[in-house]
Image (cartoon, rainbow, N blue to C red; front, top):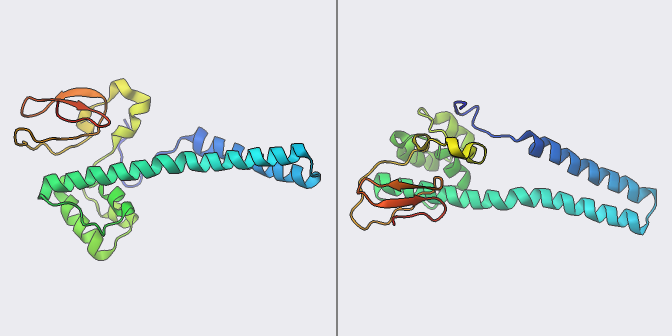
Length: 191
């Protein structure tokens, strides 16, 4: 698996980011040209279909990304709570939190405070990280059976009996340090 760092962590899917995008733009341009050649019911229909295709392309990225942002905020809020007993400052922005997820536990708290105080951009935060905590969980769709949970770091703390812990890692059963069974996955928690 390729090592992730500040320069190599972005993920591109060529068929989606370049192929499908090119098809959407080309279809829209051709429909506009067709519309200017003569307004007919077919040219209007093609223009509406091309417009719908482009809106679909935008929305099929926007909606999951907004859910992903909320999920990252929840994970990092929980991480801050595990490390300090306090939640993240509500004034910290989503782009800052998204960048902070790559910081190791040792530098996470100080870097979060610094990011808020200095109003750091996500790029500045990523460049300030000394120990990069890679996000290999994005590879799950491609390599589901080869996922190594050691690559997805969750602080190993002992929780009091009955403490409800939710971790979103990947669908499998895991034994907590207290011996409880945990179903890791969307909405997972202590069983």
